[in-house]
Length: 213
Image 1 (cartoon, rainbow, N blue to C red):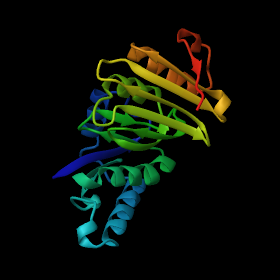
Image 2 (image 1 turned 135 degrees about the vertical axis):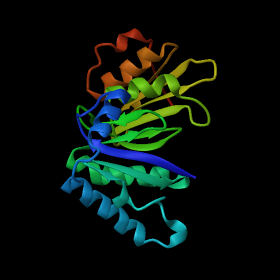
Image 3 (image 1 turned 120 degrees about the vertical axis):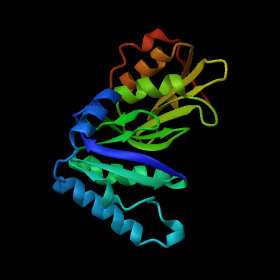
């Protein structure tokens, strides 16, 4: 079973419809130099592995379409392949599109962070669009999201089956570790993004309690 991921230039789309329009517009266009180089690197890294550990479902070079790249990955290698696309694509100004989930990870306007999505794995940055998509949809088996920007500097949330959220943030030391609960996913998403951008003006919306261990 395979899974598709797509690289496309940052800023060319902000919605699934715009992604589709951009990709349709690449048909018949010559392959871009940067995207061709990324495809070649993916194929090189795949070829260096034993066949049993192969992460590509088809040669990446076959997926080049204009300035975009369609990548077919083995289902059990989704996280690995997505990490490679971030590694190779982000410095070159590329966004990662997941057509199965309709998730667009675009580095434009992002905040660098070690992000762990309980159901989807790791991401190298956070965006407002992703936070707004992820928080209402958190569910089993990993209904949590963690964003860490430095050692002991993080915010995290856990969505319970009844729909309410535990929310915690820590600002570098045990005496700066606070927790609250919320039932509105919009509030949780807004607070996580505000925290990531250094804006605490809306934090009074919740009753924060300092945690002690």
